Length: 227
Image (cartoon, rainbow, N blue to C red):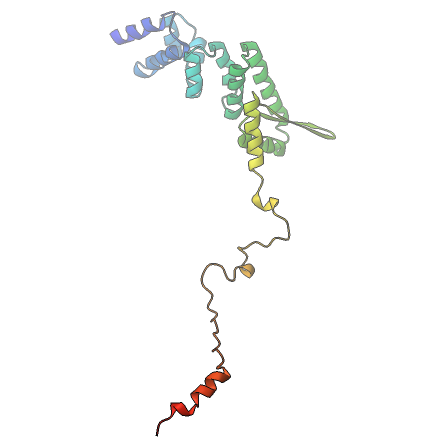
């Protein structure tokens, strides 16, 4: 009972961070088996308030840290939670909030736009798959806007360093083979492997040196014979 009261009193502190408050609600739910409705009554809040506060803990740890440190507000968690099943989009929106200093309304508009675009593209599974592969490869938000006569590929970046990193990732995808002239043989081909790797079994033929005529004369010289 004392622990329960201590937790409740701690929750009612004005300087308590949203993350600490969420953890306190979590303790009341897990350790004392309180429902969200019961927690709300004990702390003077609605059930919806308790439920939404607990949902904050579903965010990645680095976002919770930013919330605790005041880099983002509790209001910013709402649009971020809208993208809870879209981690790449969520991370990109989080970076935009930090680097572009988006307010809550601006962040919510972006999150809603992403949700609407996603719903609109559900009819084109191939387009969604391509978009997802771009996002995974580049590590940022990528949008494909399809038109009757083509479309646009939009890639988000935050600063020059981010843009340079995107360029490096794209360039790194070029294969070495694509940079070689077409008529250059590849040494790994068995046809060109002779003479490389293991020693060849071919024997090296060494010819005897021819005997000079002078040697012949010396060989049969009278001085080489004795009686």
